[in-house]
Every structure is written in structure tokens, then in C-alpha cells.
Length: 186
Image 1 (cartoon, rainbow, N blue to C red):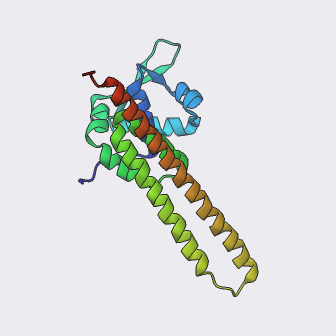
Image 2: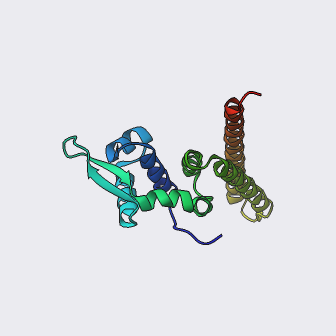
Image 3: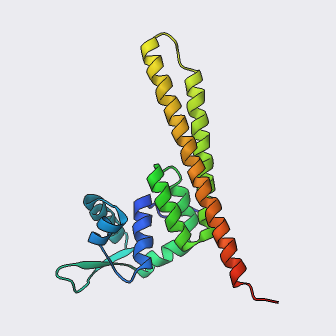
């Protein structure tokens, strides 16, 4: 796979959201998509610099609509595998944003991405357990704290993996149900 453009989970999310809607404002991204004001400004500026997003007057006071450029739309179609590979190690909320965004662009790749992210979470959980087993017993207080921390991290990662797998499975079921409805009757 050739290296593609590097997008953060939030940049990918914003680019997909703006491509799905007629016009989206920064305020709407903050209010409806749950992004912080500072985060939205940074992401929009980054996407603009890359040539993937434009701000256009929207007619509402000084409000400016966010619209993907042709290059931005093309990026979503031609570099999706590379974008997804670059976001595999995001924190959990980022993985959910990327998974949802990918479902809007290419559902099969989204399911594959979610399953791969779940596998990575499981692998990291196992690494936490391995680390736990290697802890030195010289300082009992620190060891006790590290045990608790590593156990919590391991369990959190396993829970996240389980959630990602359920989302992928549900999306596969929904896709198969829709495909079944769209088949012509014989």
C-alpha cells in the first residue's frame, strides 16, 4: 500500500461530515458533532491548507459554510485504505469517529477497519498483562499501584475491542439485511 496523506481521526471525520451535507458551519460541528471550538478551528485550518476544504459565505450573518473541494472528495475515494491505516492507533473516541466516517464512504472497509482496531486493542491488552507479570517486587507500594493500573488498562482495552466488534457485526448485519431487501424477486 502506497503511503497516502496523513489525516487525524478528527480531520477525516470533518471531511466526511462536510461531504455528506450541503453546507456545514464550524458552529454546527461544535454543537452537533461534539467537537471543541479550538479543535474545529485547528482542523478546518489544516484541511484548508491541504486544499481539501473551503469556507464559503453561507448567507447567515458572518457565518461561513464548510465545503470539501474536489481534491477533498477525491481523497476520500482514492486514499481511504491509507487514511484508515493511519488512524488505527487513535484513542477510542477517535476510532469511533473514523469507523462511522468510513461507513459513510465505504462500508466494507469500515467493517474491516473496526475489526482490525479491535484486534489491536486486544493485542495491546495482552501486552499490558505481560507487563504486569514482569513487574519487579522491590517496591510493594509502587507495584501495587502499577498492578491496578495495568489491570484497569487491560480491561478497558478489552471492553473497547468488544464494542468495536459489536459495531462491526451490527453494521454487517444491517448491510446484509439491506442487500436482501434490494434483491429482485424471482
